Image (cartoon, rainbow, N blue to C red; front, side, top):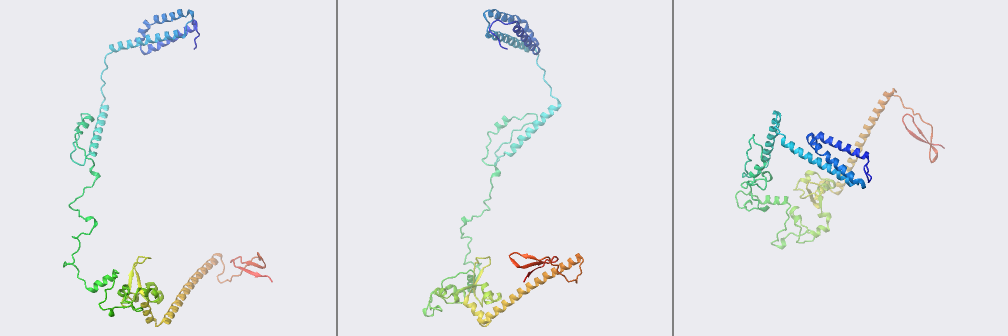
Length: 405
C-alpha cells in the first residue's frame, strides 16, 4: 500500500486501526495475561501517537511519522510482553520431576551395559606387547562409565612402540651360523680321517672320466719314448683323444685338417649312417665315447670318434659295399612296409564304402546284386572348348567328357 504525502484518509485510518486490533488479538491468544495488561495501558498511547501524527500532518505528514508511530506501538507491546512473562515466571511454581517408566529404565541399563562391553573390547584389542600395561579402571554396573577418569588412569602406563603380532620371535639357541654362505672349516671333511672312503686308482680314474675332467698330459721322462702324432709325429697331442678314446695320438692341427677321420659322431648318426645297434654303442670296450650336455634336450649327448666307428662297421658288414647293400635292403623294406600300410588303409576305406553302399541299397529298397546302370544327363558344353561336352550320372554323380568329331 503506497502512501501519499498529506493527511490520512478515512480509509487509511480504518485499515490502520483494523491491523492494530488484529495484532492485539494474536498476542492475546498467545499470552492472555500479558496482552490484557498491555491493552489496558497502551491504547491511549497509540491513540495519542496517531492523533499527534495527524495534527502534525496538517502541513503534510510524511511516511517517517507513520513508521515512527508503528515502532513505538511495537516497542511498548514487546516491553509489556516481557514484563508480563517475567511476572508470570515468578508466580508459576516449579515443575514436578518426571518419573521414568520401567521400560525406559530397562533401555537405559541395556545401553549402559553395551557401552561397558565395547570399552572392555577396546582395551582387550589395544593391549601392548609387554605386560607393563595397567588394567582398565573397574566400573561397577551401578555407575556410569567416565571416559575422563579412564584416560587419566592410562596416562601413566608405558605403551610399546609395536604390537606383539607385528614381529616374530626367534629362538637363537636353535639357530645355526652359516658364516654368510662361505665354506666352514668345521663342516669340511678331513681327508686324513678314518671315515673317508678309500678309493682305488681305477675307481678314481673312472670317476674323473664321468666328470669329464681332461688334464694336460705329464711331460715324458724320455723324449724318444714320448707319444707322438700319427700323422705329423708331433709331441703336442690332444689330451682329450688320448685320455678318452683308448690313447688315440693326434694333434689338434691334424684334427682340423682331416675331419673325415678325427671328427666326432653322435649316437643317432652312428645308428642311421653305419647301421649300428644300441647294445653295440653302449659297449665302451668296443666303442669308447664321451658325454656332453645336449643343447637340444635334457639327455646327455654321446660322441664317438669317426675312424673307430668306421673300423667297427667295416668289420661288421665286410666292406663299404656290404654296408651300402645293407642300407639299400633296409630302405627297400621300409618302402615295402610303407606301401603295405597304405594298401591296408585303402582296403579298409573300400570296405567302409561298400558297407555304406549296402546300407543305402537296403534303405532305398534296391536289389543287392543288381548292377548299376548310369542315367546320364543332357550333354553340357565345356566353356572354351567347342568340341567337348560333359555328361553326369544323376544317380551316382559320375562325370564323363566326350569329344565330338
